[in-house]
Amino acid sequence: MTPDLLTARLVRKQCLSTSAQCFHLDFVLDGREDFVFTPGQFVSVVAQDAGAKQQMRAYSIASAPRGNRFALCLNRVEDGFFSNRLADMQPGDTMRIQKPLGYFTLREPLTDSILIATGTGIAPMRGFVQWLFPSDGPDRSAGHGIWLIYGTRHATELYYRDEFEAAAARHANFHYLPTLSRAAAEWSGLRGYVQEHVVRVLAERGAGLQQPAPAPEQATPAAGGSFDIQAYVCGLSPMINAVRERLKELGWNRKQIITERYD
Ligand SMILES: Cc1cc2nc3c(=O)[nH]c(=O)nc-3n(C[C@H](O)[C@H](O)[C@H](O)COP(=O)(O)OP(=O)(O)OC[C@H]3O[C@@H](n4cnc5c(N)ncnc54)[C@H](O)[C@@H]3O)c2cc1C
Image (cartoon, protein in one colour):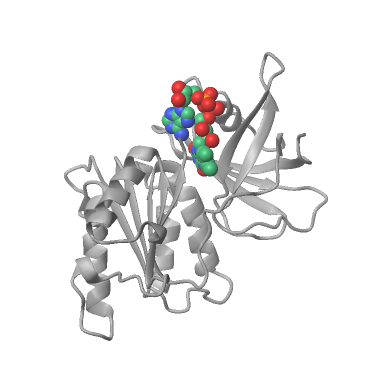
């Protein structure tokens, strides 16, 4: 049985990268005061294809809860059914969605956290950052260190770069670490893949702790089933597997690594 569907109307569309054909879409749910979800959850978009077969795809919500609005961030996939349909939407067009679902949400109690994403995997991270560090409300990070390691090929694909840089400028405990795998010569930031920068974060965190700095390999002891740092990883499977492997080498427990796979 199909659960109740909601109708979402597109109110704003922004192309985030022409080369990657990535779009930011802002939606509103008419007739509702709010749209309840936990940052990091996804909505399933539902439509019939040319053969009248029902198709459904998941898209992470790229915003924190705010009234009856929410955002998506998606790119075109060659010959893809839904991504192209959504990327072709124009303001005023509507889509049908199921209510938000998913367990890719910040664990409670909040700990120091490393957010790791590539490409449109940045969507739920934007929701986390908006929720932890709202531009118009109280900080919810409780002073925990939050590192966002974001990997893309080129600087033009660093979606929401201005927003993350502004949040990092406002909050000393939020660290934005973009890294490029095919950086141009003039790029002065990090280079390489996201998993290569995890040790740097752990070392930086160790140096900032009150206690003597532990070696990166010992920075994350699991005590009584709880952890003092966790990683949230979102994107395609090869990246998630590489990050998981690296953290395992550093002695992390699998429960410290929370993932959302897009494929
Ligand atoms: C929980 C969850 C959250 C997601 N959130 C997002 C999001 O926020 N933004 C976003 O852009 N996508 C997201 N996705 C991926 C999304 O659901 C679709 O898989 C993607 O948009 C392609 O759908 P499609 O109908 O266009 O392609 P399809 O018609 O399903 O597939 C067409 C071809 O593209 C390949 N393909 C499918 N998915 C991908 C992909 N992600 N990358 C490259 N090739 C692919 C298929 O193997 C196939 O060959 C999410 C997936 C999950 C499971």
